[in-house]
Image (cartoon, rainbow, N blue to C red; front, side, top):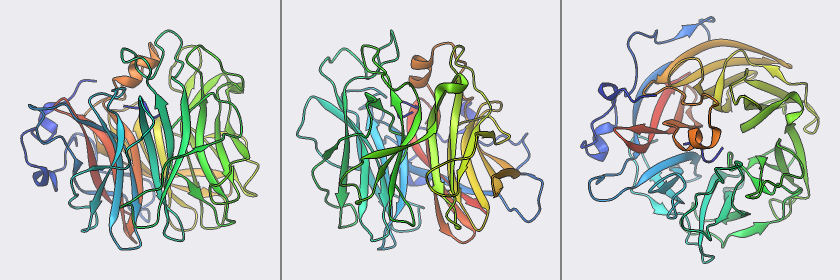
Length: 406
């Protein structure tokens, strides 16, 4: 959920007064009581190498600027680009997506700049970036209408969302300039749509945009709550159809779906699953599609995860990073997807500064109060993956990176 935003263990994190670059190699949030790796297959390497900061408010004593929801992209120039949302709060009236760059493979990052300035007001925005096969950058997400300055984006009475437009922007110069936001006509009525994923380009040329339907402000929900993927056959010009990924027929709500294509063309998708009535976490489910249209029945992955994100490695290997429900912190699991069968081989804690924070007692306010989440994964070398995620450290929400050895 793009609102995806436990007590903080202060002695495990970096001090708030440290300058930007001083965070580069500290192993923040790791608890030495946990094993570094639980490995059931010695051939499946999984190792926490180092960590640092993409963005942290350098002057919290002067102004409130917090950060959420990073997405990483590798540019044809060799630079890395990170998008993330900045604002006073997770539903603030100044909330918008910004960009930062790295020319040293993610070690250090530039100061952020706004991705775009929206002429349509009063609105806020949140988009996710991707680099397509021809080098074009895409940014797809939502423009949210904020007509009442005393309201957030979620109706506390019914979990409905403010009106929004699904928007798409493109850049042909490595993200320095962007097209005007183009409003997308959805293939079904949400009326709201979750901002949880960048566009996925398939080998057959289709673009998929994973999302989920959300209730409108007054409770309207004509197609129920379900995780879907918009489908475009013309590089984002139109999105006339959708794929059903997970629905509410199992008595569950599905958020933060991740979808990726494997080397052999299979599509794997995974979801954060909550029981409708109680809001409690359920086993994390996955599905597989061989033909790119129909999916296998949902099956459990073997772990309890929130806001899980996938990265295909080589062959049948997958890396999954997630906020763990039964243990504190952000975790990584290395798995094998043999046909439709998922097997976990290794797992490792990456950051343990807070518990998951989701008990099911009050989904809307719990989402707004979360302390970390939304990992983004990018393979930067044959044996290394860069992970970016947001986390609250000393009461400041910042974007942290972790380098993983595989």
